[in-house]
Amino acid sequence: MEIYVGNLAWSASEQEISDAFAAHGDVEKATIIVDRDSGRSKGFGFVTMNDADQANAAIDALNGTELGGRALKVNEARPREERPRRDRNDSW
Image (cartoon, rainbow, N blue to C red; front, side):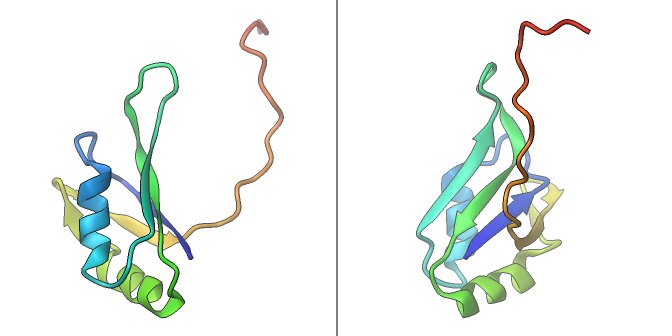
């Protein structure tokens, strides 16, 4: 199950997120989404857990808890919506 983790502190690391979720089951992968230009965190990421029961337990346990001074928003990830590609050379 893919889990959305939002409201992350800028200083949060993938290891910190993985460790928090590992307390509730086996974590396959933890990823923080970063801005491609600046390399800075966008404040959200995703955790992959193969066991749905463990994933749901982690969501219930971690949603609203504090990590790095910020209350996490944790829920099952929704499929990414298709958006039209933006050409960086377009001017308004």
